Length: 342
Image (cartoon, rainbow, N blue to C red; front, side, top):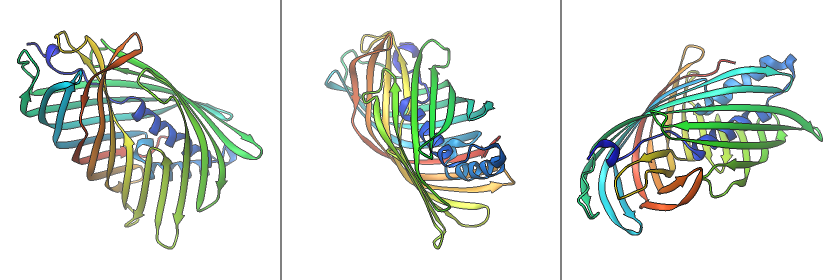
């Protein structure tokens, strides 16, 4: 059976990847000033925020290895197959400011991912003795255009942001488009603490809850040298500077990639989406190299508690085809980044 009949067309990201990044981006800007006379303060604050969260950086190159990822699948409620898979993900993300005027700005984000999947010890349950492809290497592309506007309401800073994202497989044969809007109002802001609350709205065929609340909280424990960052419900981190150039962070993060499937076999549909929800808990060590360059290493555990393939036709979700049981794994990662082009 040909490759296109056996496994996946893989694409990076989806709503659970885009929205956390967008939310943290808006939360970061909600505390900074919008006055042109304070641009130096804005740049200093933005640099601090990019140190706390790698997803905000202008360039982020990362590699992640998840060994022995357990797969236990059911197809239309019946056993499909079980096996282990080694996953290697190499990704690049680049963020570019396009234009800024008054209290508004436009930026672009491009991303690329190569994922290599190696299946081992596969036990086939499906009738017909499907010959699974044991080694798959795919590349995917994504682009996000974002518009940000800042204003004041009752002397409180408000940030509005809209993202339009397009996700493609490597040969552009499949795509998905999403529209995400976030609004945050700053309730408290001083040298040590900031608090913002807001709302997120998502227009996407794969999202079950299109509207929900957001909370962004930051606090610096000056005597302990700790920085707490909470962007709920997606990210929680506690950062400690070890030296003037290195830091260690404890990170708890909710997210997950989305994969495109395209097959011609009888065991699934021609086009489908695999949506994964992952909870990561681990440590991230980073060291600055010069003024804006940073390298880092991470390790921890990842719990894939939702993994489902949906039949999506003409941007409509027609239901679940395949479900994978929850899996608990370990991950190891390396990254290299550029803090900011601002």
